[in-house]
Length: 326
Image (cartoon, rainbow, N blue to C red; front, side, top):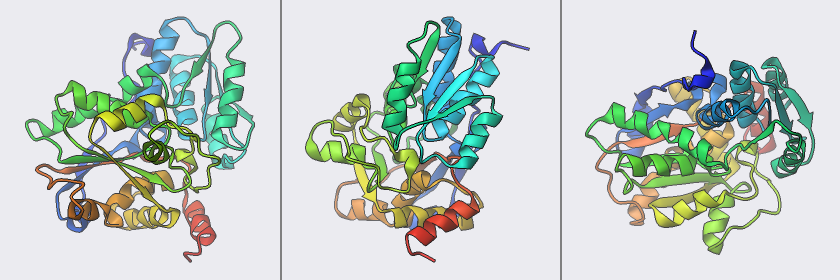
């Protein structure tokens, strides 16, 4: 068996599948990149797996990651494959099922702080010991490089056909940065990206509106996995330089999209992923085209179904109850 430290990717090549329901709604072919079936349920394993492999090869023997859920699961999974211990620092808002999943993967879990930013500050302190490495959930060039693999897979699947546009949810901005880097590398830098966030976790949108990096006062959205108060600088830089269209939706739109996607595609995803799906379910693609902000698409609309593990049917019901949707 080959050693994972030798560079065998820890992620899988995810399927690209047409959604008839989303295509009908959008009025154009919608292809779903199903990152929800990655090991531990989200795209995070691409970037974080890549970073952890590189750090292990450099000789680091203890990894510390701050996370509201998915990044920690990816780091824990990567560390279990690489045979190195993982400490995952999570905020108090992290659900018990996620903490249990982290522990099942062999990670030591430390709970501290109200939001991810607090947990992240503590994670940095824990990496002051020799041999310890900080694993950023989204703000590292190797994380972006790992995420860019998604675009190479798209290129292989689509061949000579170029995507009309990409739709992606934005949290800290790591996936967005990786997608742009991938698009540049395959010669698709003119492909627009529709960057979706929920109000209350809209750090990219707030930064674009302000014309500079800003820190949200608090995370008030239920989409806690989009819950970085400040977007990474690289994502903001790319959003200014390339065709990134920022859209915000409210929590109700995100939850409704989760529910409709479950009915349409028989897959349950997080509210953060629902923010991306709301681009079609809440009519934003059509609106952007009517307003002239998005040109008519000459290729398929690629929906990055980022997935996420912080969801269950009971959690979905809880969200609906909180938002008065029952």
